[in-house]
Length: 173
Image 1 (cartoon, rainbow, N blue to C red):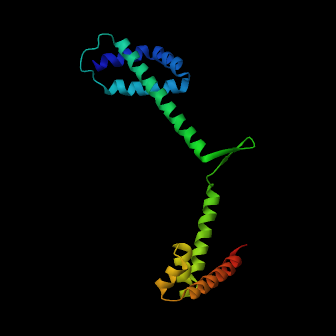
Image 2: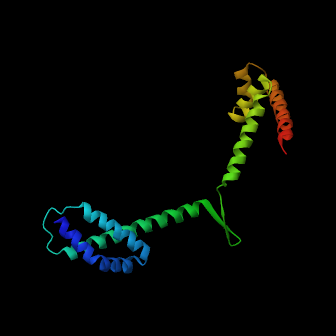
Image 3: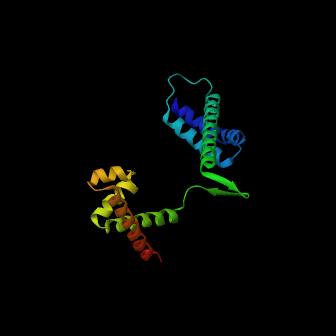
């Protein structure tokens, strides 16, 4: 039976292609769906005899075109949603909230510089800075954690900030 469908497919290929081109409104897409139809026909063995192979092939082509249209519509909606969420219209131009590759690379390099600068801080200043500024602990909790007074925590953080500014200022071009 598959051989019969293959033969009918080859005989009707041009007609099916025209049918798909009209339904899909695009010759290239019609050709893609037609190719998918060929793959499906060549791999499928009907469980029952096909009374009207031409109708069977056109029905398959119709269903495949509907599937393609639905996939395309889902893709368009997904892309529009992504565009709406990640861009903004400003003065007639579309701007993206996402940074480009260069900005991402520069940000990663800057983060590496800051981490390296933090590693050069004196141990107590580093500990106070990390606990307060990076982990969000209040001064009182940092003091309890390190076993020092709140005023000493404040002094360590001030010292860390001063040294980080100097180190990072020197590394700027």
